[in-house]
Length: 110
Ligand SMILES: [Zn+2]
Ligand SMILES: [Zn+2]
Image 1 (tube, helix red, strand yellow):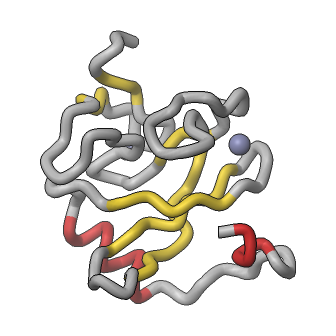
Image 2 (cartoon, protein in one colour):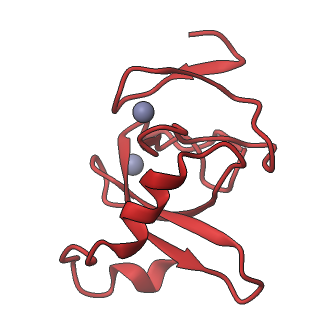
Image 3 (cartoon, rainbow, N blue to C red):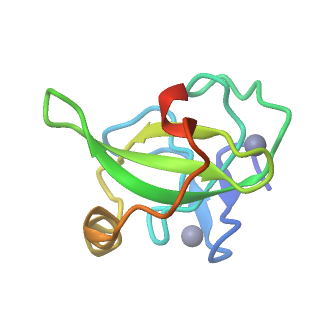
């Protein structure tokens, strides 16, 4: 793994960190899987390193889409901006999928 790309934990794609629309790409543009690396976007201060699966899409009041990621190791939920080259079909699938059951209150941490 080099400093300017990462290996996707979901589909094994080597993902370049540079992406249109975001300075801190942290998820795979193909399957949208992420890794738990950040406490705040881009800071790389999370010790977890767990695999984060895309849970659902949320739309901010300004219309920007965010992917809600769920860490399979520690249960953390985080919201991430989509990147300009994220797979549109994967995003749409996520957006129309019913929200999986969550532990009560988990979404309040966002
Ligand atoms: Zn992937
Ligand atoms: Zn985690």
